[in-house]
Length: 594
Image (tube, rainbow, N blue to C red; front, top):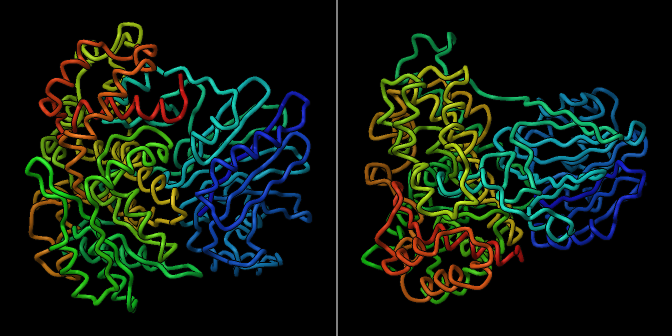
């Protein structure tokens, strides 16, 4: 787990190493254990290392293999690297170390672009071929690891975060109106390849991009699970599905134990992280380090779920850490949390994960986390209204339950120059729902949320906040083979028991029932869902600042109305609409965007 960056020139000039160094410095917190820069003519790579596998200098990056003519930078973890290493040795390759990075380099030489089909894990990889001048960029199937791009005539830059590209300079920071529409519709989700800035894009998940020496490029998507009923599962009973999911989940959790340092768990007390803890205990993990966070109550809303995480910690005798955060600590961390965001994210969970990661990183380097289960196994409240509908019929129901505001509502929020002429967010959903490979509206929604919302909300949230403290987070529910299996589960089984029916039945076979048979929980951060005091003051000051007035994104009368009654307008997902606007402005100001 690390941070990577680089520049490729196509105009006959040498790569700007100073720009790469500025990007690398911006990424320093992602990789506190080492740094490296490599440059050769028009190409330069930078890397920040978090040592988790092969702690020796043999795992340092950028990694060069002069015999194969390859140089690579890599962020992530390949869980099946020991098996791939043995396979490559059988093909005659020699290894100098034991890192997964070296396996990727030699695997690329052996399999070319098809190397991605062999990798099980989370990864963003960039490989340069010395002899052809070609550079290849690759991102993992579920987009767990980020890869941002900034292209100008004659040049391509890439980095693990958007702010790193800003640090390099010469980025078009104009707001992208389409991305802004998505941000205000999907509670801050901006689907790849867009970002909120015109000059920065992101490589979509499960995508390989090939950039030739002359600057021409092509890309292809190499993986996409079909959300359809498959012949191989015809006749499966509920018990058969439970057995299959449990076995696949066991494999996923086991895979994510691959490490040369200890692995802990972020334990919220809900089904997902509790199930991971129980399965790790089955794997023989003793004195497993687990971590839970809680906040002060605000506006009558409780701020912790320690009662449930305690049940799991006691059941499995974990080395449990309760972390309680005061209101002052929360306010004090907001600025740093916003700075850690690669893109603006409104979920109250962001500050929770940031503060949790800060504490966890003091005692451990690697954790498993429960993100992805709701999207993969149908845990959200907007799926049941889609039951029985075709994908085409489901577009309206999905938008009504999920979107923060409709297209008409945009005109009440945005200044006229920032309005798109059509409802681009609804059009995006309609196009996605119409794609082949989804039998029902529920299937289409699960596919959309897995491919888009999951990637640019919970997954990005966890990557940004953990890596801000040099902490590697692994997400077993996003093992691609588990996702493929879940995509084939009949919708009625996914939606049973108020959602995640199959996973709940699996859970009862592993962990205490009282953790499962209760209202759905989450990391509650009341001070952000209910704005008052210092947090409200931060938001108000940002939205009424000279920078905000000069930017002119939002209608002043709309902002004034929200500030007068800051908790009156909530989104269908119970998000605070004032926080949504304020967070965007805070992020833009934090990163020096005029």
